[in-house]
Image 1 (cartoon, rainbow, N blue to C red):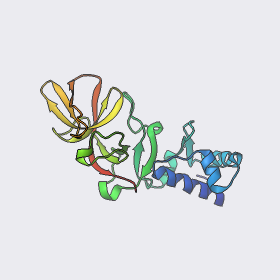
Image 2: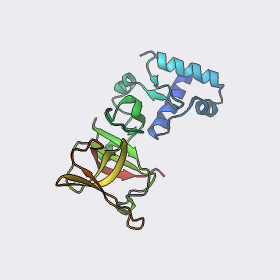
Image 3: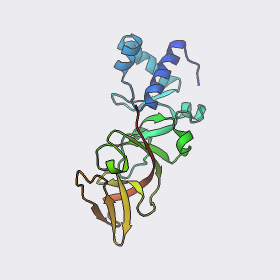
Length: 204
């Protein structure tokens, strides 16, 4: 990989920091942070891509660290934060990763571990709140009654999962809201277990 200029290093560090916080920056935000013209940031990002440090997924906030750079860093970027999960796609496909967080000391380092942001209040009685993050260990099956992540109708959902005779029960944990348990036939293509929850945290 080609060496970077001082300015290129500063921009790369800024992008890395934002990705660690699951907040990919737009080129406009980079320009504002460094007091640069947006065209200058476009050129800087181009150099970082050409030199092998970044890839661009083509979206408004599509800048990501390249696999080559992450490999060189020895995986120092941390556990990937997955922004979307779709049926038939690898969970940790590059286009699904929004950033990285460093929690290996708490949860260990594994190529099968990822982080999801919690949306909704269906698990508040378990201490899992809207806006929290959960660390998930990829698994196609989990122990009965564990809190896990299932892909349901092409959307990731966090529930306590019970494997029953002929069906799977996805149980919420919010008595005040009165959420009902959802039952899905075993083998139904609309549901797929994708991992078990290893821990939960919030960013302050």
